[in-house]
Image 1 (tube, rainbow over the protein chains, first blue to last red):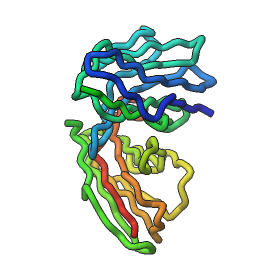
Image 2 (image 1 turned 120 degrees about the horizontal axis):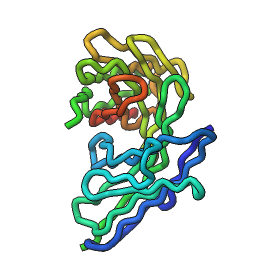
Image 3 (image 1 turned 90 degrees about the horizontal axis):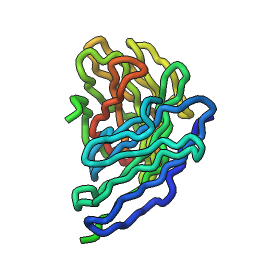
Length: 114
Length: 112
């Protein structure tokens, strides 16, 4: 069965500092991996996705993630945090069964300190 | 703006009641999935509809049911509400099964 683990329910960084949100997955087949962002009282917005092409994936708002098969990781990074990045971030893996559902991590709340 | 609209945005119901949540997908999207997101957790897959037929179900009891209509709208029905059903309910629409999922803003259900 596929699963996703996000390390750290809360991550706090200073404005302008590097953002690193960790995601590890478990999958018996080559995974499709996603990062979504959720702002307060809103739905989920796709940041970026890995679909077995380039291992370094660039997304919206300056975020990127690197797929590392040897480490079963798909960590999300941004070189310089902005106050508007404060939100909850979810990593997800898509199943390869008939409904291609998303299996989600528990989320990491990103806090930006001024 | 994802083009996916959910209604209502907030709802308070009493334990034992029934509730219907609605989702309007993007035009042409044949697939809709519903997720339950409890406070402080990631979303959990409830079920999926593809071309108006149920196409998969997560670990939810039968009192959670749904419908998908030809006009790309869908419903999530929950009978005999329990306190633990309090959560944010999200619908996601897709053009096809293996394409990008677009999420609505969710319905916050509180059961008292």
